[in-house]
Length: 265
Image (cartoon, rainbow, N blue to C red; front, side, top):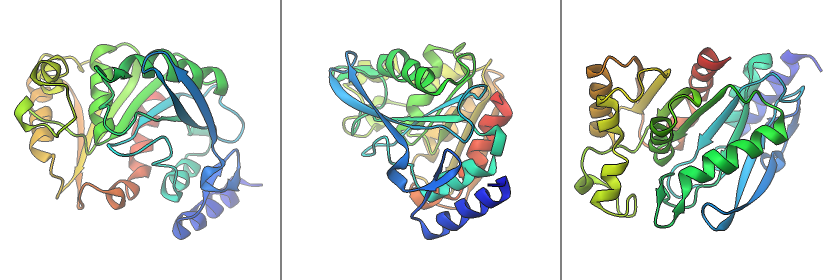
């Protein structure tokens, strides 16, 4: 089937909100390959939803996308995402959506070694199953996942070809944080990405931040952007009308994916 026809199918499904695009065909939203990980890092069974575009994953980069609080590996598998992916055609990445629990915030803590889970279990499995290029891995996420993407890039700056926070859940002090986000003040201090940005932790990585004009995390996001600027870090920052919700994120999948392609493609 011609690429234009595939795109039109995906767009029609997106408008209905009931379809997904995978492997060059229209499929149900649950048609993505769902992998199981018996994790030694977090001591529980987790899942990874893996999306491999038509033609297979060889030669493509891998995007690891982290969900927000209360989500799971299927949180972003909707028509808006698949329509944006289809538009990329041959530039489309392999995308891995790991499950990070309700409020792990994607960092090593008392509930499990969530950062190790992503780095040592999710990424190797996604690369093995998809055949994607192991030298080109991007990481991003929504809300809790945006924080997690920054924190993982802070710890592994040479591993990622791009990092992005979409409405990232950021704070400047432990007292501001949401209940359950950290194990305490010391845990927050170990994973203070605003302080890391001020120290130039992201200076060598293509960096993105966006948030809606009504997003409650804008103060923390602004502090992160200011810290990055103070260290000379180049940050692409976008602000569009909207809040901290699915309607906002779904409206901007095309921009999100284009950033990753421009940085890693």
